[in-house]
Length: 124
Image 1 (cartoon, rainbow, N blue to C red):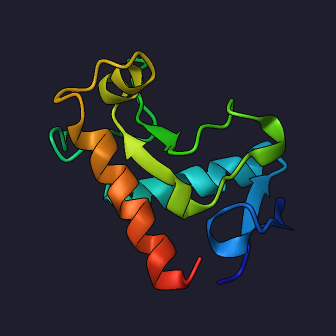
Image 2 (image 1 turned 90 degrees about the vertical axis):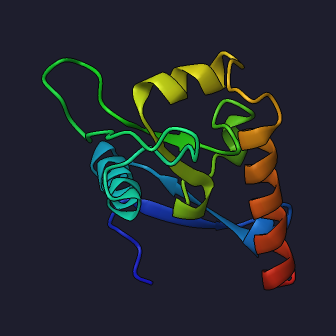
Image 3 (image 1 turned 60 degrees about the vertical axis):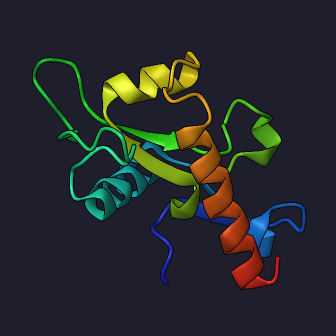
């Protein structure tokens, strides 16, 4: 896979896969965000939602590329890899950050299981 311009790959044995990717420019982040949107085919990736989540809207309610391992959880550990992103509608993104995702264990637990599976498959 070829990295988009403006994305830096950082070797980091403490994260799944042994590296992180960091978007260093707005254009790089916009490109990565577009990749996330395309993967989701424009739908919210919350399995209990799956409503349309447009990349840009005129009503101010676009979808969001949500970091599973949050960016704010330590700027030095920022990970903008596509596998760390989920495309969410604005409502689900708000619910996630305000811990109002229902059922309480469902979606978060499902993502944790998915990440553990990826780690096992890659030997990480």
